[in-house]
Image (cartoon, rainbow, N blue to C red; front, side, top):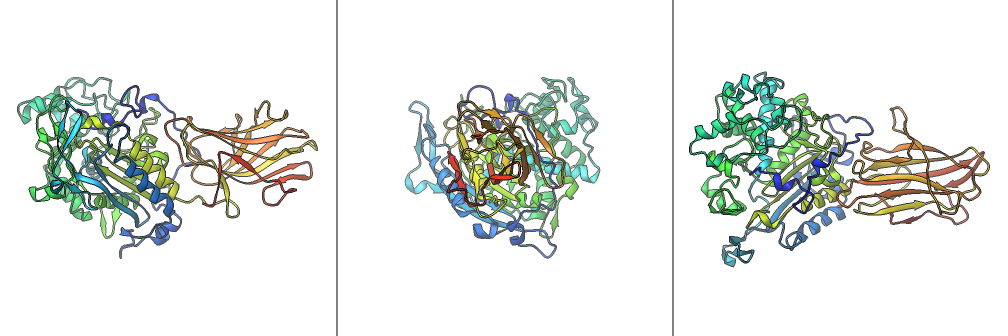
Amino acid sequence: MAEDAADRDTGDGRGPTRRQLGRAALALGGALTLAPFPAGPAAAAAPKSASGHPTLRHGTPERAGLLAPHLRQLVTDAETFLGPSPKHPWYAGAVLLAGRGGTVALHRPIGMAVRYVAYDEKTDTGVEFPAEGQIPMAEDTVFDLASVSKLFTSLLAVRQLERGALELEAPVASYVPEFGAAGKQGMTIRQLLTHTSGFRPWIPLYNAPTHEAKLRLIYDEAPLNPPGTAYLYSDLNLISLQLVLERITGRTLDVLLHDDITAPLGLRRTRYNPPASWKPGIAATEDARRPWSGLDRGLVWGEVHDENAYSLGGVAGHAGVFSCAWDLAVLGRTLLNGGAYGRARILRPESVELMFTDFNTAFPGDEHGLGFELYQHWYMGAMATPRTAGHTGFTGTSLVLDPSTDSFLVVLGNSVHPVRGWRSGSAPRVAAGNNLARAVPVHPARGRTAWFTGMVNATTATLTLPALDTSAGAARLRCALWWDTEPRSDLLALESSTDDGATWRPVPFTTVRHGEAPQDHPAGTVTGWSGRVWHRLTAELPADRHLALRWRGTTDRLYVGRGVYVDALRVEAGDTVVFDEARPTDGARLVPVGWEPSAD
């Protein structure tokens, strides 16, 4: 099966995927640079090696520049998924790790690494080990990463690009001539890395009797779409890339992983095919039996879960890597550092840039760097920005890196334990992403407080000013605006009424980010990503003795961004200041409905 297929749904396991909805991403506010990443308090607190590259250590939320209550809420929310979600637990247990800069501010195991010995399909229940045979999660529990393994294969490929042994636009068949059959002669390395090759999601390689027969299935596989014409996530892309890497280096993928990534970075608990001695420290996965599994294997524990990876000897480009939360955090810190960690460098900054840059601009909603997915609210939650990079794994794993805040999140769960059918969607990942995003402070444009929409799904929130007398003419609103919402789905609108709120009309406005050209908003709305900075806003207002003015924010039922902040409101009419948030006006004050004052 496609290793990540069940992760890419709307939460109920049916209907179109979030990707297939074709949301256009609005990257407002300009591009971000990759290295170094300015990150406020976290950057100053980051421990560094003698070579100047930040390394990780445990520390307080304050040292990381994070708000402790929201990290506590991250754990609280994660623990709810140990119960019915909605019918069965989403995972038997998990390890949560979150940090910013060089500080890991949260590293918490919850639940059980090993709980069930089998799954009873007749009663839809898990058969538990005796209490003495169950194993709780620990900070260093090792997980089958499933499709998060694709990131390691992609890193290895980018290393070969950097060395000149591989070319991004070169045909795959120029390295593996056997691959050029069945319409694949023009398929490129870039298309493999960005899932635009046209391959279908997967094929059952495990049914082929020999290794050579499995390879022949790949060589003879015809793409569903002409290469480069559509996005379609496929395990076959990274399996094919494995074949290229092994051909051009003369080394197997597990050796490449060790020599080029895990050894230089000191990732001692990251490898393919962990030895038997590791088993007590590994999270169990599924009671793998037909019909829900392609193979009858019983409880899978300490061996790769993915059937195709298992049939390939445990070493595959799309799945098979085992790792722990700390090692993944080190990998993430390495990439946020521009390819270096301590005294080790595995990539140059310009090579890392390729992994954080969208190559799929022709396929809005399916943003993708080389190997990394970008801007995916469906599992990144409010951490998602045009530059936020990550990946998920079918077993319940995920890694998310946000360069704009220099923050990182690892959620490792054993969500197919005891059976894959017990969970759907990515609600625990989204909840964790929302909480970490909320933990990164947004400092008010002026003073100590600002008005904040909150981060609640399916909500309409309004901020209404007292009635304003703008009859003197030449009326203008000035304020500061900060926004980050799910593109197109969640909007903030500025509206006015001259009939005591019976009808509301949009108020066009202009925003300016420091150092950039003004942006006009003729519909009186903003959506998407504004760059995590305050914008100066101006709007011409109608002349009226009792003008009502409001901000109205709406969110849909699925995902939210970091929200919207409004600050430093001031309204002038002619030469008169008719409203100034910074000073009392006859005792009047802003009265939010559904909003909250924030001291972030």
